[in-house]
Amino acid sequence: MPLHIKAERGDVAERVIVSGDPARVKQLAGYLENARLVNENRGYYTYTGEYKGVPVTVATHGIGGPSAAIVFDELRMLGAELMVRMGTCGAMVPELNVGDVVIPTGASYQVGGTIWWYAPGDCTCAVPDYEVLSKLVEEASKQGLKFLVGPVISSDYFYVDLEEFAKKWTSRGMVAVEMECATLFTLGRVRGFKTGALLVVSDATLVKKEWELATAAELKEAVERASKAVFEAIIKVEV
Image: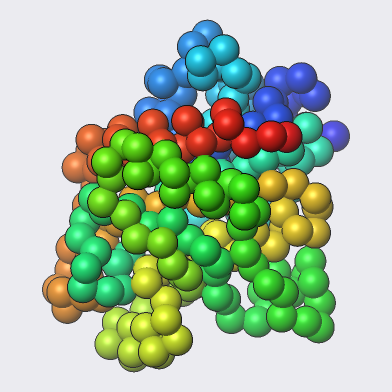
């Protein structure tokens, strides 16, 4: 049984929304009916309830690949068949502003680190499930969100040299940077569960060349709008 998420099979739904920030997970849990806290060990807050009558779990995965991989693996042990990351990202192209949405078609990453342990010696194709991706795009359109569909870079390095980092990854077509999608997409392929992601832009520093990082409170309204698209998509994907 899992060592970090102190829950039993039956406590976690087949459909799971994962997010790095515990405050955001608590916000997402507020959109569930009959939500109950099934884990708070190690700060990995996990709630299970219903959305329009469909069982859904929302869970905290922390920051970065190693933390997230633990949670993804343990949620899978507890019966998760679908995980969608509802997180934040930094804009890397000028058409994105704070509060906009990115729906990743895939995630680049530096070879090594966490992903290397799951697929040693090779560069894995870190892409989401097509059905999940298409449902997220469909629901984002229905909700009237301003969004961009494209590849992101999952970085293990938060305080980067902004100019060099942006130059390198935008030249390869990346539209945003975040820290966990490549791990999620890879584990989904290796462990056999469906994945996807929808990210709210919290930072436009790389584009505007000046520090601009929104707080959870400042993003609350944007997350509320975006989360409806995620909830609507996740209940329509077959598991």
